[in-house]
Length: 132
View 1 (cartoon, rainbow, N blue to C red):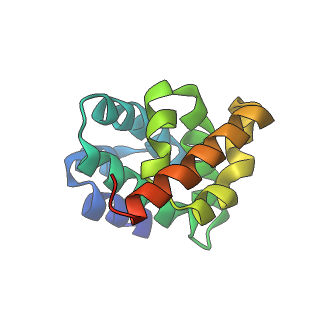
View 2: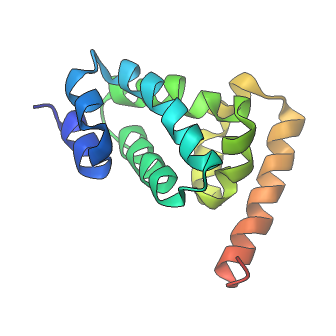
């Protein structure tokens, strides 16, 4: 079994069948985006956090295929989902945001990205200060 399948099964056991049957990493992330959005809508922060952790693992992988898959099928689409876009500052650090910022610009304007980055800095400060 490939390392990326094992990572998904370990981090997201509820998606074991998807991990085992996905044709490739891109297909996997295409299928994970909607359940992540639904989890966010119903307030399942644990699942959303675990999806982001899996995305982070793919993005940090030395494999171009894994990085491309998570960028094109997950990160690029975050601005298209009002729920995920609103929730994003709770799921990643400012450093992570700056790293994936070019990916986010595909489906958003520079102004939207700037606003989101300011929000992220404010929310991360509140989290660090124990206010959230």
